[in-house]
Length: 57
Image 1 (cartoon, one colour):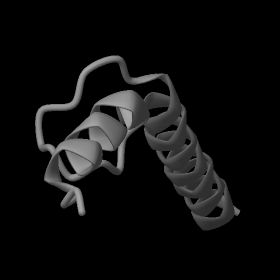
Image 2 (cartoon, rainbow, N blue to C red):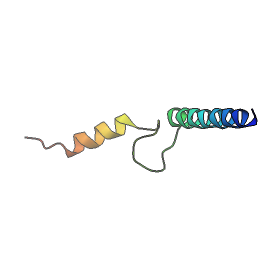
Image 3 (cartoon, one colour):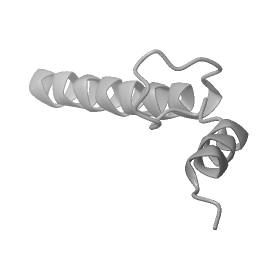
């Protein structure tokens, strides 16, 4: 019986942790890694950089 309670608490903790990580990824306002996987992706800055690199013919 005790082992089921412990496994249940562990499962609840794991789901809570994953939910918190997902929540943080969508509500992030700054991005320190620069990988673009967080919610701080600046699409306008990327479009501007691509427009600057685009060759004009």
